[in-house]
Image 1: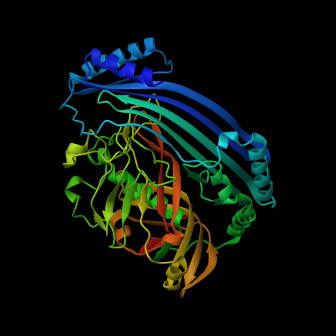
Image 2: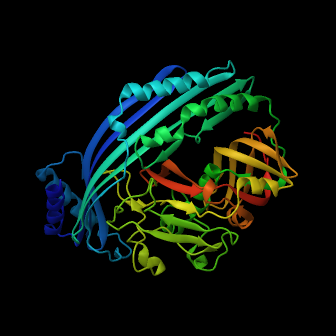
Image 3: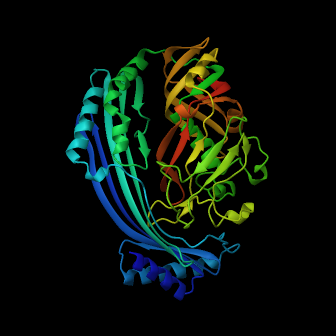
Length: 482
């Protein structure tokens, strides 16, 4: 594969490219799920192809193919050059790539148990057992247990001399129970909603989640929610558990700090951002307790790689420091727009047939010094919410509303009755500025988001957000039923 990659770069340069790169990507995926006693998905798929990206006369060209041989590589490289030359006739300015050293390296996701070596019978037995336990109530209308595994090997070469062989591995698992009574529908999930927990790891992730130990609680809480009172509306103190904080980070900080969005390059589809470049370095994004850092080297992160798809080595950098907005996520092409000398390495493509674009990295809220128990004890009137159920945020990543699966009333420092349909709304900077407690390292969890959509045509990317629970004062809670 390395020879194919080098041949592609040579072919593009011979035909007029001032810069060229190729990514040859081989992917193996397995998706398994059991729903209401039946196998609902059992899929094993392999995929192989390549994409060539070039610069000619200061403009991009890209072409791809599923046939990996020298003749096809030569043809596709030529097609990419012709497309770039045509694009150059309409360019507003030349593409400028920030400098990056030439890397020659091999990088592999650390793994204890290769999920593709675990017998299918063992995986399915666990899913069936979870599904059976979730359905031990006549009020459970739907139960689902699932697993997902992916191995992606990528060979990348650039005309600048980089040659990178990189293999990433991702595992995920989770379960959910849906209780129904009349027109009331309530859901509880574990370890998180929308498929569960996903990390760059092997089957050891599934074993570590201890799914069978939580199935009974998931079922019982789904049923209990049916008779729970609705979350009362009002401006109150809000405490979020860590997976909901992670999604809050993703939607109101992650996308807002993507530089291509800020510059209007996503406006037609995904919107723009209120975090404009004039705010960089001076804007108060949150309270002094809020420290948000991108880290594409953190173990287990879904965006953790050796290198991004610009052949930039993975690194760590701040986005919000003691509440102040100090950084963006960007690629080599956009670095000069904010005076950066080097890319931070936030450029990734879904696969070989997609053009690399700016993507969310592993963006984490650094631990504070509070325990969940201390947050609750310091709250006179509030609500504790767990596990995302819905989200909505405007085109500038400013005005949002989130719903959670379950809530608990807090009165005089004590956790009280369960509440159904808890939700909250706010404006991004006001919300983060109201943060007065952040969970300590003991409560900190790295959560994986495997399904972030962006771009035209749509690309799905994976990233992680680490967080502990956090407390926010004077938040509008219970603004409507779901």
